Length: 323
Image (tube, rainbow, N blue to C red; front, side, top):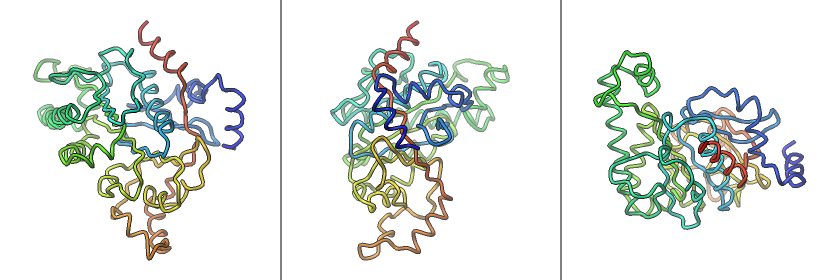
């Protein structure tokens, strides 16, 4: 089924899969706090709620694959939500501009932290400065929940909307924050401060509406497994070897993917399996361990044709925002 869809895409290049899926009922009727298009399987559009995922790790050996993932995420959110509902934080350090399409997005969609200079942060020093504000923002939001006697950002926003809490400087409106990092592993590997700050965000972010989408092309065996375990949801393109797939998914599925296919893991926690090297026994896969892991993730792997957007999708949605 997916291979048939790939053939259709080669014939009809002028219309992207993102454009097709964004016109579907599944996408139009999605009621999540932060609904995003993931792709298409045999049943149609695959839509996920980022607020439930709640953080996503994307891996590919190709820059274009990660660009498709980032673009689909951003365009989905721009298409469905106002700037009062969500703000973006974009950190683009890889030098190839994965997040370079968004110069025309209204400034109101970008989080206005103190001393902000650029909408998209592209150097390490500025990124670390931004992260210090993000950690403080997470902590401040927890204090708001405590004072307002609410349990999460959704409850807090509803209390403001129905008048149980008066909107004021003490109780300000707080949009969801979606943080996109284009070269995640290099960022955290080169800076312990970045690792600590982003770990803090992933540990505490869900309840207060702060979510991280991280992309990398780094070799899987070099990625710190403790950091990787902070991402219960993953978008994995074709890996070079089954061992690479095993390190990322505790399964070899990604090694057999075709172009434009992904393995999508939706909100599955890898309890007790932080050290990926435990999977390997003298260079071969430990079958008993693999069975335990397969049981732990409860068949949570989905093979999906990724919702690749094109330049027309970017222009269409940004023009819609500017009307």
